[in-house]
Amino acid sequence: MSRRANGRNCKRADRQLRQRLLTTVMSDLVQDLYLKEIRNYKAPPLKASDPEGHVQKFSAPKPPQSPEDGDIAQDLKDYENQQVELEGQAATGDGGAPEENWFEDEPDDEGAPAAH
Image (cartoon, rainbow, N blue to C red; front, side, top):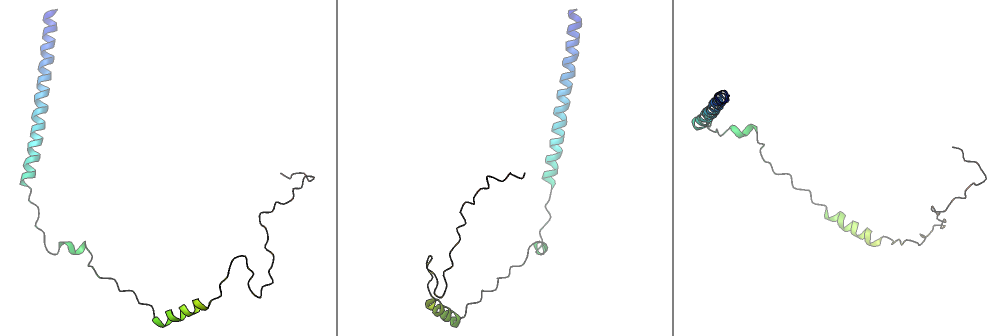
């Protein structure tokens, strides 16, 4: 029995060795081909007209229009002459309508049945 077991082990070891060698040779072969192609690659030369289709020409935006000085002076005078309104004081000429209290609780209708 030991001869059979020894023979099987030898065959298995042979198979594993061949498989390791094959994968090592194949990976080296692929790596060598890849490195060879990278070394032989020549980048195409760039032309002066290459970026024209991909990049827009820069044009400065128009400067903003300056406000007119005469209007500013008039606006400032109007602002200074404006009547100041304070909260809580009634405006002149207004009858002083009472403000509604929006937070008042409405009376509950306890006697009426709920209509759900």
